[in-house]
Every structure is written in structure tokens, then in C-alpha cells.
Image 1 (cartoon, rainbow, N blue to C red):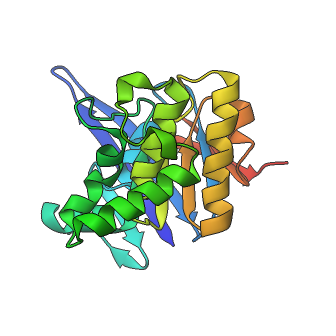
Image 2: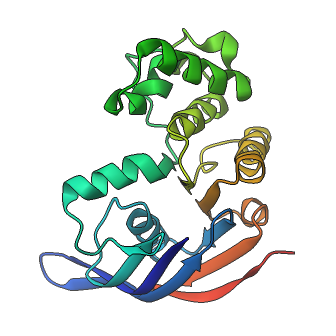
Length: 226
């Protein structure tokens, strides 16, 4: 379980301080699938970055499995991030000079695993997501939907307990969107992975069991989807 308590976050510009999150309280239980919606600039991506330990907050507290991360060093945050979280972004952020298999297994290079074990795990995920025949191809040879499936495989290679997805279908057509969402929903249901999804698309958000709406840095609605 993860819990945010009165989280505040501001950014300093040359002329002023811009408050982005204004006292966020949020509890997310293990195995939930949650969509976060909000207009551009509402604070939803900042919230996701704090949840994923990619950004620090200014005030409040954040507990992961009952342990506060407020005073964690950068190294300790990085260790927890690599062990606990997986990330999928709007752009797949694949490395163009690496084939698909090497892209997928990249996060495992920080762990003590044999090359054989890493490749076996990577090939298994590519097969699961319908890309086993493409493992020696490069990102520029794939469609946008295929690249996003590779990005999901890379995010899942470390078997994270929590998967964070920031507009994962934002650059995809409707067919690719449906396929990616089927994969993400399947991960949540079959593996019990907690899934937190930022999206501006209502039909994507409704795939989740719970929808949170953020407005001007505050949670304005939090409820179960139909």
C-alpha cells in the first residue's frame, strides 16, 4: 500500500513560486487499478512523478508499505524505485541503437543476474505481448503501438509491484489504444500489479476501477467507475 499525506509541491520560476500540488491526501491499496485525470497543468504528472520517486515533495509525507520515504537519500530512493516501480511514458523512450530484447532487459543490468537469465525473461515478456518475432528488430522498425508494448515489457521486466503509466496511449490510434489497455488491464488482473494511469481520455480512464480527478493541484473527485 502507498499513502500520501498532505503532499505539497511547488516550482520556482525566475519571477515567482508556482504551487502545483496543494495538500494531496491519497491511499492506494495493493492491486488497485486507478486512473488519474485532469486538465493540462492540473498537477497529475507531478503527482505521478512523486508517487514513482522521480521527484521530491516540499511538504507532507509519503509512505510505501508503511515506511516513510521523506528522509531517504537519493541512493536509497533509486534502489526502492528500481525494486518496487515500473514506468511507462507517452513516448516509449526506447534506445534506438539497441534491439528490442536489449531494450527490454536494460533495467536488469543493475541486478546480479546472468545474461542467459535476463534474455530468457525478456523473451518471455516479448512473447506475452505478441512481439517474440521482433526481438532482434530495432525501435524505428516498429509501429507506435508496438513500441509502447515493448516499453511495457521493459517496465515489467523487474516484476514491479506498482506500474505507473503517464499517458501511455496519448500518441496511439484507437486500435493500438485498445490493445495497450488490454495488456495493462491484464497485468493488473493477472499479476496483481498495482496500476496507476494518467490519462486525458475518458474511455481509457474508465478501464480502471477507480477514477481520480485533479483540478488546480487538488483532488476534486475520487470514486469508482461504472
